[in-house]
Amino acid sequence: MSKLNIVILAAGKGTRMYSNQPKVLHTVGGKSILEHVIDCAKSLKPHKIIVVYGFGGDTVKQAFAHEDIIWVNQAEQYGTGHAVQQAVAHLEVDADTLILLGDVPLIDAKACQKLVEQAQNKLAILSFNKADPTGYGRIVRNAMYGVTAIVEHKDASEEQHKITEVNTGIMAMPNVHLLQWLSKLTNNNAQGEYYLTDIVALAVQDNVNVVAEITTDEWSVTGINSKTDLSQIERVYQSRAAQKLLLQGVTLRDPARIDVRGSLSCGRDVEIDINCVFEGTVTLGDNVKIAANCVIKNAVIAAGTQVAPFTHIDDTQIGENARIGPFARLRPGTTLAADTHIGNFVELKNAQVDVGSKINHLSYVGDSSVGKNVNIGAGTITCNYDGANKFRTVIEDDAFIGSDSQLVAPITIGRGATIAAGSTITRDAPPDQLTFCRAKEQKSIAGWKRPQKLKK
Ligand code: UD1
Ligand code: CA
Image 1 (cartoon, rainbow, N blue to C red):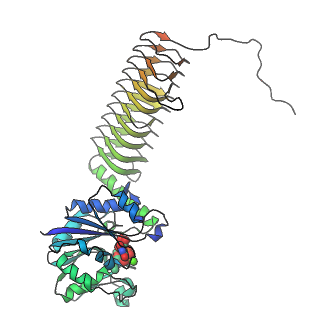
Image 2 (image 1 turned 180 degrees about the vertical axis):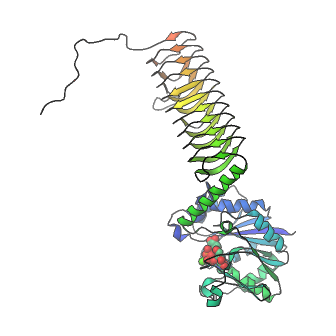
Image 3 (image 1 turned 45 degrees about the vertical axis):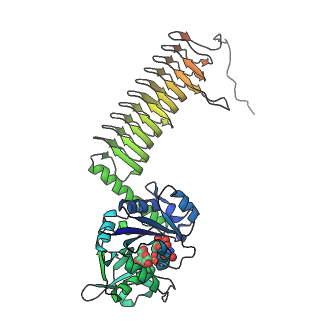
């Protein structure tokens, strides 16, 4: 097979998105529309990827600064043929070109591969049957079923309007022909545009075979023009992601109520309850159970761990058989070893908690190292911030922190130390001793009365 050039058309304005953000940077499954297309292109191992951009160009380019892409500016948009003409200087005479559209995120790499294979000395078009073909270019076939032209909706006759086989806009052809045809395009049509689709009639004139490959996966060729389209494609993407998980043996209580905005890999016998959102890269080990309404981003959760409802996990690693939540918040830099318990209304940030330790109720533990088998009582707070700088708290193995204590960092609580409830600890606590710091006496005032509501 010859070399492959891929041209992605992405200069359109996206007026109907009513957004200041370029259309192709809106996301599907947490990844920009254009990135989906670029990833598909990359999987075909092309010699070159050329993106024709226009509206919001610099923002688009910046979003892909790390990619090996040739950017071509189409400052004024005079049609799809005009768009490809802008890329001519980069097209190699001994290569084939695959044209992709930058606003079609569910594009299927296998269908593209097939099209490219078809394109040896031919013009290969990806088409599909659309119940309501309004707006699309119609595939015109002759009595022998051979493709003779694509006629745009606005240029089509009444007879041609009845054709339901339409052009996806995705096509492949040898550059020797494409370069010739591009030079012959005119804008004598209803829209005064240079139509790429006119190359079909030019191919027929040149006796170059034209084949239209019909796809039945309409979503894989559907472009996004509005927020309605975006929301529909998002649902299709999510339901496909859910089906993949089910096929791998993951239990989803409702496949319609899970969102995967990135990649989620699961071991065996993983269970995920409703309304969970997974972002970035998330790995769940065997037998992990995620209860309803959890948001989990960039996390590794090891085998046997259970996450109770309404838990928020971000950039955190969790060991085996841990119990997290409900209503826990694990913030970036947190690592929890095996058999740890983190309960309700507990916030951890950049905290490393070792095997078997428990922080079960209403606590904030930040910038802290917590040893093995530590118990941190309800309402404990590590005061890690003096208003200007952050300091670390170290709590050694087997320590017991009484409820409602404040540990003012930098501070170390020694191995086996006990901190009495209600203490504000500002200096290191020695190992194995009881340390407390409270008001000296407990007083009771006899005869004291609660204030009464004043009568008007
Ligand atoms: C085009 C096809 C039509 C097909 C339809 C599928 C032509 C003439 N028509 O229609 O047969 O059924 O796609 O959706 O090709 N673009 C540019 N520069 C331009 C114009 C468009 O980069 O000057 C890009 C757009 O960003 C978009 C793609 O090309 O990604 C298609 O453009 P769009 O206007 O949506 O398609 P139509 O011309 O309506
Ligand atoms: Ca158009």
